[in-house]
Image (tube, rainbow, N blue to C red):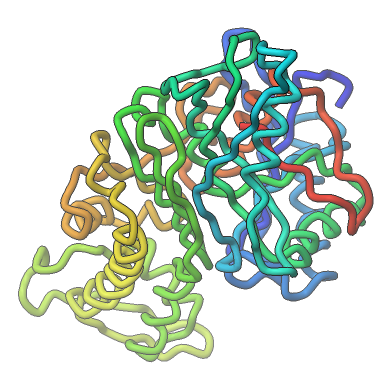
Length: 402
């Protein structure tokens, strides 16, 4: 990776490991050079539970990406997920000394540090401090306070934190390969970089990234992140429900879910059935289509209901002018957008990465939104700061600057 314009995004997902190699272009777009994927093993609910197995899978995906992009990968941006991740909003404040009235970059850094001076669990580490709004001497709507005159700088931040060791497991898995970790990024934050336009963030939008083991979410109002988090429910739970409910093997359940399933009820003929052909170790079976769809509908609805209840603890759901955007592997489920519209009572859309060049088939695959989003995230933070890797396996977790 000789070129500074090349960036690699790595998502260690519950269902698959995705590695995307991208090249940043001067016009702000990204050219996708190659995608490496491998089925995920040793990962449960977005977190590593078998270190050696997960590391082998990551290595396979990296080698696959190298071969397809003809690029030697040396460093990556890593997405993290897991229900241990938490977030809150907080305001920081600094007062300038009496002999100075021009705000500088150190003041901006100090106000961020001040916003973090809150009590979080001892085992947790800060992952992101995402700026919402600046205020200078009570003036709202300040976009960049550096160089402005004032005595009091305040700033509102959305702060994401999680269990330090669980975040470090992903870092260590990569560093053992050995690859350098440029940064760790909350998965839904990465996805939002390519799923939403700035206009949609300004209008207000909720991104739901539904993968195999987790459902990550992030909510924007007035262009700023207001809520985020991760539920331990995903596509694997639907597959498991189908397997238990219809008494068929997991592999057949997954295939049935993808090829025949729907989140919509009442759309099939009365008594309509699906014939599962016999296979080695499986005698074959005839199942009712409406029964399959009911199982899928109930599990997806449960995830959306849980998410909605959590979001309703704050008032921001009332300000989503652009609606709901669903991405990730589960977004491919037939009718999931209509079910989301029903639950959230607003327009919902299935979304994938926008404004990509190169392998357009990759950008149109919602399963790759997070890995591609990591490249866009890297592009945005590199305009603010030089790259710096994560020092040491159990070293400080560096945060994003946006």
